[in-house]
Length: 479
Image (spheres, rainbow, N blue to C red):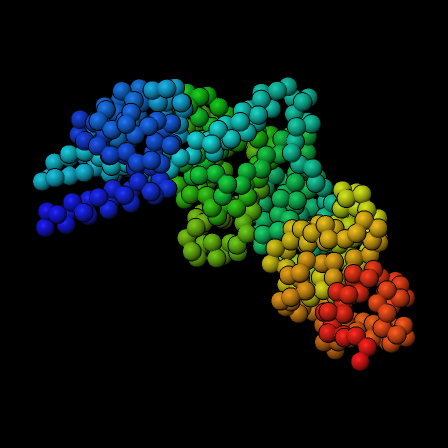
């Protein structure tokens, strides 16, 4: 039995060695018993430097009050997902998210186990962003006018479908006030473009517009980013203004609000109700005047039903509600959007594309666009990479292959009042165009004795394009 236990311990140690999270085990005197490779990589130390050594000798910046290890040894209580910043014996600064657990034997604490995720690089990047924002925040007012990150205006929003124009009309009315706005819509529908347009059309246009994606930052860091930090709040904390202080007088846009921790949602609600911010670890309160625009890529009712959004926060934010329709509900806008992207990529690629062929446009109109306008933009950019420099028109064979494959047919008209007979007819446009193209190619081949080069010249397309279409339609050589 003892031999089996020895084998089990060895296998367990091997497993802890190869997993991609740091594992650190100390006894009740602070001496390291086990220290895996990932933890050594995170701390910038070697295992032999740490095993058998006192914890505080290797991490002198930590104290009984700031160390998650020591708190667990003192209290016997778990600590879950706690951010900790410390400096090792060589001077390297490290930030981790720790989960720390006491080890008990006969009811007594004999040590502690810590599992750590390294977020040092993420913290460093966000520190740089926050420092830049802080410099803007402390700069003279004349510089702040030019520092707004809001580049888009209502004139930049492209579309003529009824639902889209109605949403723009509501947004323009909302820009006249400072009431909170909640924008919902699938990913890629342009929620931040609407937020920037509302800011630029309102009285705060000359003040800062600050955007923060709530899903891009660990919750353990988000509190300090939103509300600021006071020196000494935690190891390495400095006096730094948060998003609310920086956006004071302007607009704060919080994207993917449903990713925000419920605890932080409660703190956000208090700021919205009172207009008062207190930095993490600080004692002083500051009055702020910030317009809040929030966005979610799921339906707010779904967010409420699943418990990822507090109902009291939702009712506070949902003063003005804007819903952006997916691209499949704006099929009539695809030609306009495509024309816009063609102008954009003509400039970027140094080309002179004039438009799309009817068959290429039909392919775009019949695709289901799960990524919405963003995906359409990427598809047109991909198309440019496949085209010859001298091409003046996008043909369907230039389009990304996935658009030509698993296509989900959708009506070409998004107007619910359109003639149903016309919808049925236009929904088959792709088939009609392809059948006509196939017949045209077949006739042209016969007229030119199945000479590929002459046929391509007669059709006004490249030889490679004709060869592609021959393979696609299964048109063979002269029988």
